[in-house]
Length: 368
Image (tube, rainbow, N blue to C red; front, side, top):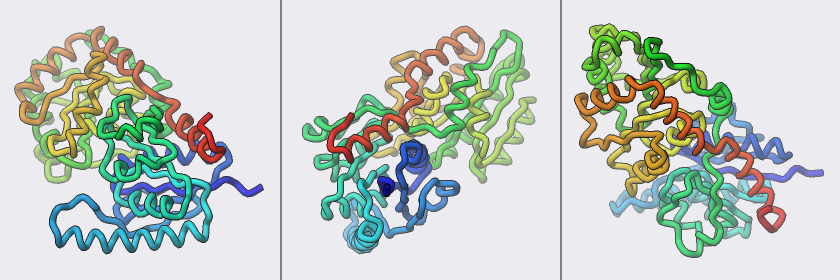
């Protein structure tokens, strides 16, 4: 019996690629074959991706208003469409699944014009521009959050709340539970920079920590994702403040870091917000102000409403403001534990399985 085949299209950042990988693993467990199409940027995140083949296609943003860039984008997307159509003709997938990023555009366009069933997964609480183009004719639009702005009335008829598929190390951290926190023990702080706007976090947080009372500083164990240009400043600031801190541009063991964390600080990208909820950790978020349609603020709305997270807008993200909030949160272990439980209650650890089940149902002609 020939395995069912799913062509996954994702690209750009880990925010698109990590959920795609988790969904691929769930589909493989159901007997599917997976093939991935992505762009040059997406290839950087494909190590270990469980696919029979990984194809690089041309892609570009179709949303620019600059006429020259728009013309170039049109050429790139036309190439990507031709490349994807050729892959579909050879490989004959049963379904195409778009996970966002520019490569999803030619892949979904190819599926639509060739009569192949396709599905969309939107990680953010605001439907992305590429996904908006294809949502009305998608078999379903799965979303990472209950809130999904910019979805048409037609699209809402096929909307499924699955959550964002989580990597296995994140699920393992959830299983570990919230680490014990005593009034005089170590406090583990995890700081995630994100791929954009990391300078604000990299340089503001060490200064804020240095302003905390010595009784708190001496108990902190900090792991901070720090951009290269800010490493020296961050390390020196922590050292001068007598704070135990590990600052690096990237960490491989993110699951273990989540498992140990008592509090997380980061941007409010879909992956980070979903991981915080999935693991069950209190958090402080600083949404990226230039994010399209302010989708990062929308992403974190549920955690804030549940009293699991605080939000400090970029304009207010000063060392003084953050230091005050940190002192309040870190001085109350019972409150942190309650916030962790509230975050965990919003987690969707079965998101990958829910999405795989939906793809199965789409191929069978009805969602089951």
